[in-house]
Image (cartoon, rainbow, N blue to C red):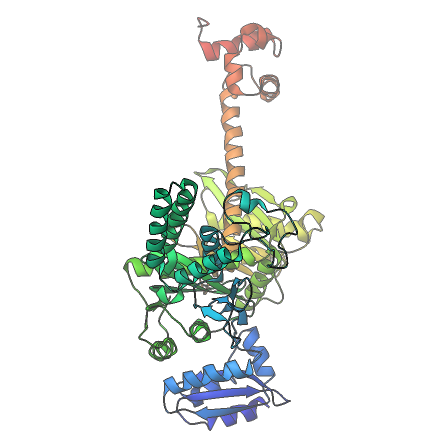
Length: 604
């Protein structure tokens, strides 16, 4: 089947167009566009792909193509076909992600202002579209509070007179339309004022209220004047922020995209340099091509809304950026620029969008998902025989030729398994020989396993060595000498001491910086191995320093040194002890020698 499809693809023209992949039942399972149909479609039937594309290819029974006159026509056609067919293997935004509208049904006795996802031909009036749903809900609630419209769940006239007014009335945020003596005319007047705000006529409304406030004050109706003053203040605040929740008032949208355990698409909305809204979409399926994913997501995002800002900022260059700009401008009914900022404030916007995408992935990914996806990537990238469920890592720590040690840490299913940590004193390797020290430590670990020591079983699925190819090669030699075959890779650091790549014993590097979940995991292993090794090294040096201080005193051997430290705890406490206190622990002549050593012959 693959050979037949490849031959059919090879016969396609070198022209732009759209291709439709079908399954055995004839259902369209993927729609894509191509600058050159022959090259793009042929690529599916050769080479390696990620899990999602492999699954797609395995389900392709046939495909059709539609030749287009231009790349822009292909892009428009692809977008239309994706919307119509909703193919299984295309990345699709959820339907409820459109710009929200505010709906008002004036035919009702007590018209309500509600937030909806789309307009309908139902006789109601719709205002918008607005920005994110969150900011729209918040702004609508603020407007209701300013105009003292109901913010509770009660419905009118059904609930009039049924219950006592809620807390909003007692806080001065509602006129209590649930009371029988609150006239409906006041409600309708407040709705009219809300419409003026939604129509952008806040200045006209404020003028009316100020005139009414002056008249109330002149008539000595000070309570009413104070009430109007509070409304004027609240509406003035709304006026300054109203463009913040209007989709048509947005100056700049910054797009961010990140791949991790999941992928995430983010759009940040900026007005006058202020970040005022955020939309994001999490994508569980693996993404093979960032360019294709971002292009498709941006296209869906703005064509669903039929509205756009003045400028859309992308995180990186897209091959179809010009066609994308043309499509978004067409949908918005005006000119929209699409660009990739390289420096300055706008570059900060896109960097912030990418950061938010990364944070959303982190926030929505469970530990198990991260561990599973990381293990899958390592298995594939390192060509391992299976998932690396148990990973061991080694590091050497030394300062000079003394107290050279190695630390071994263990990670099981992505978590540290501290009961299996081990440390080794380097004993047979002379001086500062990192390669020899590494070979000795790994060799001793493998020898203990070969000898049947249960404390050193089982073998790891992956052995990581802190260092480059030469360190990894030393570890491989130690494994071979003990009859053990374990995959070994070095952890190569960048100039900031972070693990930037894994390296084979032969010197071939596998970069991990483009895989955030892998980069973070390997970095954690490297840091934990270093910490464990250096803590043991410091402990040995500390013991050595203590031993050398007390051992220098005549008459103090290992037994008496131990007795002194057991009784006083530290060398400092021994130094501060009186002669009588020392005599209770060691013989008088030894006690006198210790006291004189720290205080001099005079005893001062």
